[in-house]
Image (cartoon, rainbow, N blue to C red; front, side, top):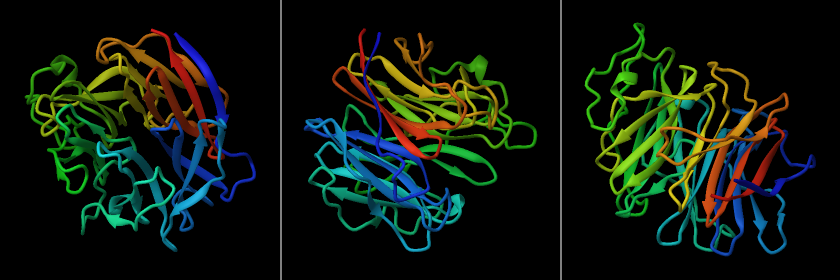
Length: 345
């Protein structure tokens, strides 16, 4: 089922930063891959900037990392690349010393990432972070763009940002309802929409909650998200109105170590999910695996192990083009690793 075409690092030990994390990936029209990540002395340090590298499809080789976004003395976080329906390439990223006070900036490119516009605030005046928080946006069947978003304050909460004009303006969805433990705030018992597994939804989540959703659309207007959680499992929520409102989040059977996950829907309808199958809150970030679902995320088939050594292998990004799936992830905070796979159904 899985045919490995390549596995390679984007750069070697000779790199212009000590630490790197949180990669993002996009496939360009000519087959080139473009990846971005944040890098600096360490996560959250004032010298952390956004870096970019291109994999030339013809040469099958990554170019040198280039700094694409920087602001003196302020750390940068979680870049997200997205190819808009009109062909414009967008780069979203967060800026700020505290996660709760992040500002989201966006740059655009009309030449495949060779040059970029000046950075603009995604939502002027916002404090806390709008737009995609870590995983890529998706375009719905009707052209609406949904950006998977979340905020991290005393409680963690998820939502989507919605754009009807190719990313020029954004409106927040309702927050994803969540039943919290006795120390937190409880959501209503009514899940709000059909399609949720209400029996599972009654369990109250421990810890801060859920963040960093990853999205897919199963049918026009039927949207779903998987979420990182503090409960030791991946959570899920569903929307029947194109992402405006969401049902009460409920636990899946997928283990989660309170680390990032990412998913892409293939042209065949299969879902490809990359995650750490570790059911411990703040557990080890190894192993890292790829799993497929043919039933809209109800069950997941045979896993492909990407990494299982000691160390950190985390924060995957996964995209597809034709029968190819491309994955990047953090490799021990030292490098970004990329896989190219064919999925033989």
